[in-house]
Length: 623
Image 1: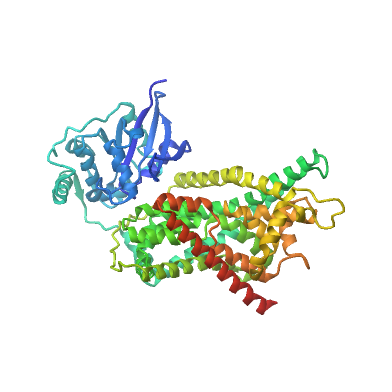
Image 2: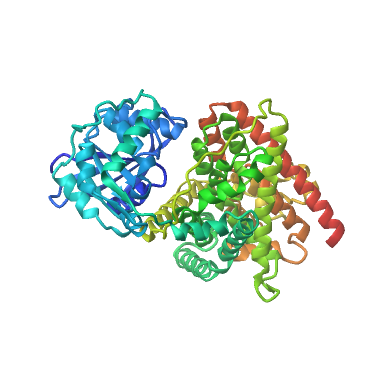
């Protein structure tokens, strides 16, 4: 087999680079970290018609090689060959938004100044033609001295032309007329060069982008825009419960059948049966049940991102977030944290100001990540009636929306308090590009949802499954002495530890089973559901249908939880930093154990304080 062709995709944010990457590589992608830095690299593979493999590197979006953020610094270092593992690229494919050449050509000129082998992809050509722009692609290629390929990445248009260009190796160090362009030159020189190219190759017909103007009058309106954003968030949380229900039922039934089938081949009541049915199948099933809800949440986030709405939401919320000590740029990292705080913290690399970046990192864990959904779904499903309010709204969805809103309000309040203690209180202007509205690319959304699903399943198959087995061991050994009258788990390591710590959490309404479940939840929040299932199965002696029976156990008369306990635990999970991966990411991003320590202390402090008030007030109201 011939040696793989190594290419790297370079472009401004919102140029369609990721869609192009997805259409080229499909699901043959993987994500890893560059050695010595925290920024991720996304790589994929595909084959040309000749069978030659192509290795594609999708670099972080950047407006210039004069980096102002960690993401842009990685792109600069790869382009300049400063990262050894990516020093040998056969070509750089510069992806350019045809509707915004004035901004995007600047990066192409910088690449040319470095003398790199280039191939320019003129993306979103359909949108340019719709606006009345006439671009002479052949003349643009001659003017730049590099090949130019037209594409519409969201519809595969031009992809084969691009592959043919790669097949023929139509890229080389540009023999350019723009020989006076230098990376170290004055910015106005580059602007003049871009304007000269545009005059030569582009005919602009005076036609406004009426679609974008129409939607912006709604989405950027100070009143209607906020109402629209609130409705969008509300619909998303309603859908998380309403749409996922039927699929969740199928998953539960599937794991029940699997547990009964495999358990039937094992000796009834044996240690092995308990380990397999309660520890492995019950634990994994209790978490996998919530996969549909997580995928629905990711789907909506990806659709909003692909459509071009997210930057507008950031712009709309900038004034409100500034009053709380945040920047409008914090909106996208914080929204990402609704899926998982780890990529949310990592997304703060796009925030150039160190002050704003630190505040965003500190409040990101307060966004209700998808790992909390299993806990919320369990408790809401058990204690909140499934009924319709005002003939339209799902009551359980309303409660879920309230929990998410509680996290958001708490984040704004924490950011405001941090702002009071900051020495630098000067305003920082928000400068960002608002891309044109686009119809979301179905292929990119599908790949994105599948990737998130794979990550979640790997967590179930990896750390959560391992912790479930460890917890089963701690709940099973040592065995009770002869003549014991209490359930076996009371004599185990986990039981003794739970009883030891329970007095500390008694003011919150937590029993010893909850305390035991909170320990492995430090590694992964969703682990608490599997942990509760294992603990209750072993403490009741009922080892069948663990995931299904958990809801019945915690609501049982006499031995179950009160509504006050359930509400207290829900509030606990709004704040508690039950995610070692997030804390490790914060250490990696900030390089400071002090930041991690402050985050851990203040989040656990808030969790205890707010749960205490919730439980005590709920007891007074409902008894």
